[in-house]
Length: 198
Image 1: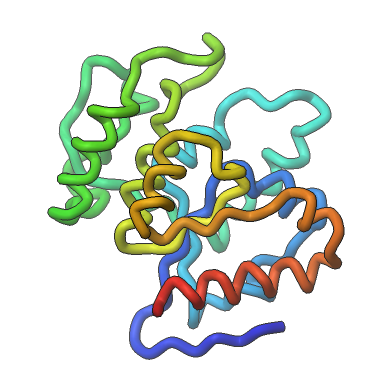
Image 2: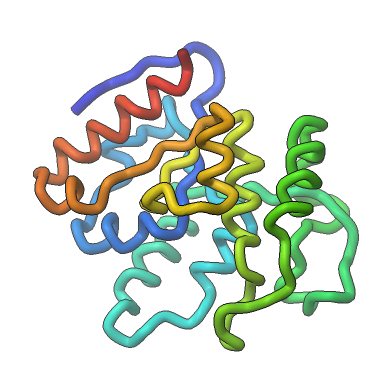
């Protein structure tokens, strides 16, 4: 396994929701590859809601894996904000008083710009909690300061734009993930994360 040493705080790494299938199918031990002394694995609040959305019956094991990760090694990166009447109390996009962090200035500037281009109040399905592109917009915002790992296949959208703007987007290849042994593929991810520091 590749071991990357960092000085000071652990490196924050954001996981896209589309990683859970691969991780669950291969029962990846996240701590084996992302020791807490070196990495802080994160999802956005939007990513957490994606885990809460209804899963097909044959994919319930993926949801269980993701929920277990969220309760153990993966941290929700919630951002402080005010209550919005657009959403139920249960699915507010911002955290309330006493929880969450303040958004960085460069994140706020990027968030407005990306929402202006990609934001919508349409849902792909009525059963979904989030609007289209909401989760990817927030990941694109995080990629200004932190690596974001995704299987999004470089499709056009917020992550595609962020990648071409030189932000810290790590696109994974599904075919390669199926061809390589798990350990080799996971180590490729670690090397790609390390490359975002340069």
